[in-house]
Length: 347
Image (cartoon, helix red, strand yellow):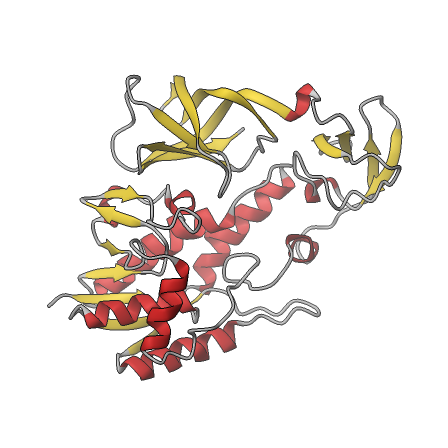
């Protein structure tokens, strides 16, 4: 029977994944990836609690347990990427980069070197013959975050939860008596815990207040730092005045944030967009393919046409309908039926 190294995060999903694989007869090894241990002021990192829960699950399942220390690589590959993106005025997605560089590259390579045949995680997705497929639970599907994982890696990956819905997963964990069965889902930055993005960025990037300017060119308030604001954002502007305002743009050089109270403002709506760092899991799609795209996690799938590419990594796409708040730095992820094909970063 093949040996599977399962990434145990200390949550219910990865715990249930390990339990299912053991029940299927695999030789299962639990691995806690120690990627971040730094406390922030007033925001203790939860890694020790997560580590203990992962270890308890391994003991309950009677499987070997190991720790892979990837803290330096996580900072170099994920945190630096995130900080650079915010400094440039875009909104990067660290979870996608974590999957690309840490979970399905570094963890995979290290596990194989240590004797694994395969790795597994608690993601809601499915894979078959090097293809990435949507999970049965559309509400929990995580292929958006996995779209930059290469086909060669997917051939060495198992997603045991691909055919389950979340309530079923908790029932599975409970049936094994696992301590994580009723553990709440973690929120916040990947591996950092319950930390708001503003609180995290303040520890690394100095910011100065600046002007918030409306669609008529009037200064209507002050912001804490332009990098904190995302296109389409409504909450957290603190400008008052009755009508809600939406972030329509920003100028990092001038440290200005531009807002509009007109939800139909053309600056908020787009049909065409360009992408960079485009990465396909297998072959790039053909012009005849009927494609759908998702421009943020859990956003609806929209018919899309790939118009052209200026290079292998830069593409131009057109949506069948206008959508609000296409956000530079976020990913556009493409699908053909229920297969996730890959995607790129919106510019």
